[in-house]
Amino acid sequence: LPLVARNRVIGMLTLGKPSEEHFRQEILELAEDLSRRAALALDNARLYSERTAISQSLQRSLLPPELPEVPGVEVEVIYRAAGEGNEVGGDFYDLFPIRDGAYGFAIGDVCGTGPEAAAVTGLARHALRLLAREGFGGPAVLERLNAAILDEGARSRFLTLLYGELWPQRDGSAVLKVVCAGHPLPLRLRQDGTVEPAAEPQPLLGVMDDLELYEQTITLDPGDVLLCVTDGVTERREGTRMLGDDGLTDVLTTCTGLTAGAVAARVLRAVERFAAEPASDDMAILAMRVPEFPAG
Image (cartoon, rainbow, N blue to C red):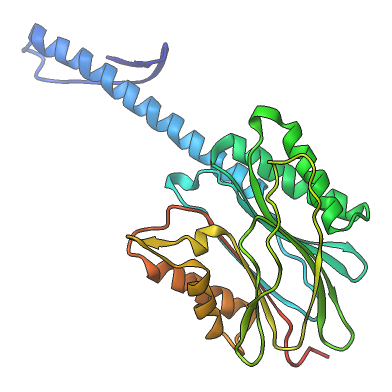
């Protein structure tokens, strides 16, 4: 019996018995029904596998292939896509050279998942690089990105975004200029274990036409850490409990003296241990640390 799905033969179903015996009519009718069901199940599995492969390929294309080495600054990123098949989500991050001695970094979260969110994610990541390398400062970059998102019309999505520029200094410190547009605030860990927000909240992108954003300047001294996350971290839930900003701050206070990689790993472990159920939202963690004893 041919396995026919969507007007296409995808295989054969073979039944056998001793040659001197014949199949009864009800057996043949059952086999025909079974062949139709099997064909549809096999074809659905093939389509789902193709969709998953496309989704994962698209997700990878929306994230930077590798992070550049930043002189005098440790950088670590952890990204976890939630959902079956790691469906394309709206969380993204980036770190890229702008010009000699200056680097741009971003971490953002587009409302929703699927193709519409992916379109805004791709638009945001590539627009940030282009505008930054054209010489625009942080507020101008985000204001132009906001206009581009609104131009998408019905396909547009809200976007929370933390964008910054980083300048390593000769004295071993690092100067950062950041704009936090509706995103969870970046946290700064000092050597003495104190943790404080490193920026003030401003409006998110994709909502209002006229944004007036401003950037804030901070200096990371040797041993300081800047932690940036998406809300998949702070909104991790266990029943009515939520990790929240305070919970994240408590975790970060225990990270004094750790490398950027160790800080990001400890935050991830804290998020995973907070609830028994698997995470239902994407997570991105970006940690930057100025080492106490720079190489060379």
